[in-house]
Image (tube, rainbow, N blue to C red; front, side):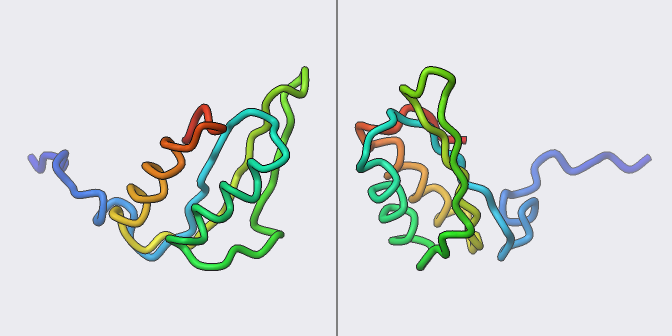
Amino acid sequence: MIKPNLKQSAEEIFNFPCDYPVKVMGKNHQDLRAQMQCIIERHAGEIHPSKISSKKSTKGNYISYTVRITATSVMQLNCINQELQDHPLIAYIL
């Protein structure tokens, strides 16, 4: 019987480079989109506007963004996530 390899590395699971959605939720602030985009572009290169979608919360206090990038490594994704987590306007990252 062959057991599944539960210790596969993230590099093996993701099969880089790959299309990857970065999902960000934060306070609906006029600067959030530009600052979030700057952080992601620092690690993933220029993002075409068609690769960014957004949706406001019911009351309009929060906004979520999905940014599609070409992910090249786990290190790249970790750097993006850490910088986004450290930003004061960002509440959640998926």
